[in-house]
Length: 208
Image 1 (cartoon, one colour):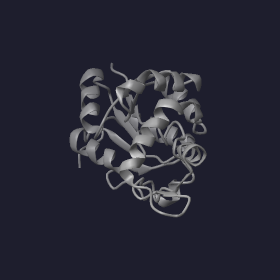
Image 2 (image 1 turned 120 degrees about the horizontal axis):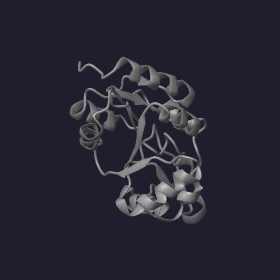
Image 3 (image 1 turned 90 degrees about the vertical axis):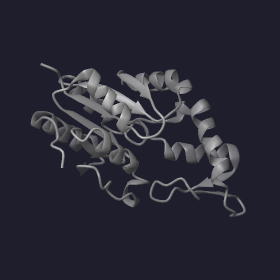
């Protein structure tokens, strides 16, 4: 019999990113970074208070992943929860970074005791999730991500997957509304672990 499958995001789910990115922008680029509700657009200002253009921010985000991934810290209880889930299920980390950073992400997670398959992706996560379902043929599957757009993508491409919205960064979570297409919103891995295991026991999600 096939095992269940957990497909999980990395940044703001397994590892903190936004606060470290903001600290680096402050130190290295003299920029103030304040994302509103998790949105990066119009989030950054120069020291004189003027808005730093979004088109100039994205190269800096790339620079962070190229040189500063070592700054990222583990979300509390994430490693323990994954270890418990891995006893009964397969785990794939589906992260929206470019392929050039794959080895860095694998090493970064391994340094925190997380050693599972890592897939890099660009754009919506529904299509790659569908490919994983075809590969693993799991008895049930759960998807975890902090961005509502990816839950909508899963709903469109893989509606039989249970969808858990998680924003593990305390500085962001209160301002991020629950994703409309998620089945639940849980920001703590201790509670998330129990929810995920329950959904595995229930079997595939029934399409609404």
